[in-house]
Image 1: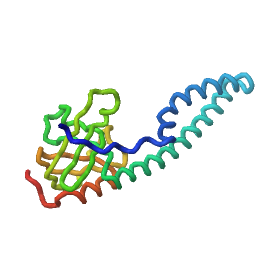
Image 2: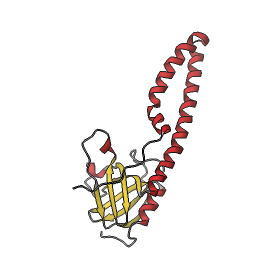
Image 3: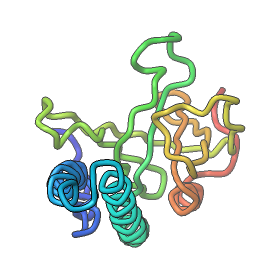
Length: 188
């Protein structure tokens, strides 16, 4: 039986609105352009609609960002971090050498990782459990940052019972992770 993992906090109303904003922007743009196009002319109405939709998207994006930060901090308090993992010693260009996003439940000496694709209609992903954690330190970001990683994330190297692992997460996630690992050097 696969180990269970806590579920991450659900998306807030502004985060959900941001996900659906693409449809609202398209609908609002077409509707606004149609109505204002007759009153102001095409080009002036186009500039006005783009400015209004840009302001709307910026406002919703800022509200969703603040809500996301609060949600992720609540998850960290529960011992759950949003992260990405990869296996640095995997064959280059293999799936194991690529970053895989998901959530990890961090306990003393144990990480349980659930890939993000698990709840999106994909085949049920199994929780991967890593034990015997040894924090090896923070790594320098590569010159070209991987597109799978969020802008503010940093990368930590960890030795586990299943080999070396690289984990990318935010400051709070890495602080939680380093607090639950053995700081002595692991097996090489």
